[in-house]
Length: 260
Length: 258
Figure 1 (cartoon, each protein chain N blue to C red):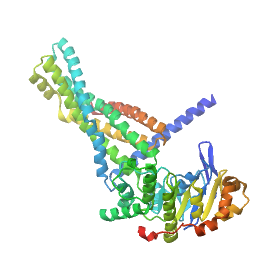
Figure 2 (figure 1 turned 180 degrees about the vertical axis):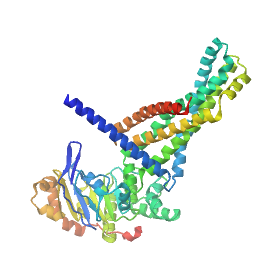
Figure 3 (figure 1 turned 90 degrees about the horizontal axis):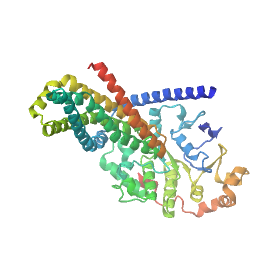
Figure 4 (figure 1 turned 90 degrees about the vertical axis):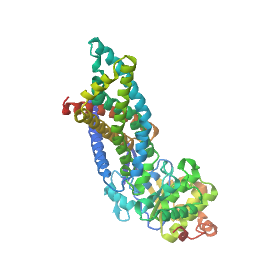
């Protein structure tokens, strides 16, 4: 893909593949186009040239109304939540269900309660977004992104502003959804430890292209950009990743079926 | 010289492109009017914001405009011994021109700018993109109810403005200047014809409301997604809608026949 904002090139020959049912971690410095890549996968941003193929469809060539059908299978967590500020938490999280399903009001309320409980929020249904803390707001936005049980989940900085307990909670939830429901996840994050623990694939954005591979492959490789970005600590962390995964609690906890 | 020509060309291209985008947006806005679901709840909320919350401003402005009109016209007419014509002149000038135009400009400043600021800030905070990602068309969900509310509110507010302005002129002409109240009302009744004058007034205010709805939602929808972009879009709405109202006022008046 090629993409430029004005005279500033963002991607110049970027080529990147993400496999279904895996968790992909997008890494890179500020301004390398991580969030823009998420927006492209969601069809919100079109490349200047090239192809963005999602589930067999080239999004770059589709009209807005056709993109809508594809987006029903994609959930997206925006960096600032993007909750509708005139609606309550219940209305926000229940909005996709109200728009695209024939569920009754009671069924929608039950589903919303269930998803909010999964992200550690109870008794917030009647609150407006402005009455929530930053961490609560992100978890409500996360609940809205998964309420339709999408096949693809795009998360822009899902751990930002969360306390360690809730980082673990969201991390567990992502892994459970991935393992049990086959959810494909694409995450941008600066929360390296959590992100690397759960990632199947790492994609490092740099110099308007990307380098991808499993965490182990990237840690063991000799790409100078990767070495520079991860630093000594990062490479050491990756070297011990198997050990951390084996003894960590990622993926433990209740079943993803609880959400259904 | 080449640079000047280049910048002129770029400016012309950009203007044509902007007009094209406005036309496409207007087309989508129009088709979304008949698409289910009706968004009636959002429409009522927008009607409350644009209409009910503008009532005090419109009533007060109408009354003061009527008072000024009554005072000016009474003084001028009395020079020619024609003060009995106050009701007729006030009625015709308010119903045909001043009512729809002044009300249109007031609603532009009060409600049109608010709609642009609201839609623009929704864009800046990615709420519109959030809707797209939920497969919900933001034009149908956000812009259509607000544009429709402005188009519906404008004729109602125009009627309110005219009633209060006529009352303001009555207070000055009758209570202050000593004109007979019956003469004022009789002059008003005989001069203002429903089909011609009131019809023209309602048509104008409906067109002004539609133009304002289109401009206000488009400017918010297409603004740069940051605080400065929202501020520019809000100012642009007031300027563009005001010019559109004044131009269309002339066109409708000329086509209708004075």
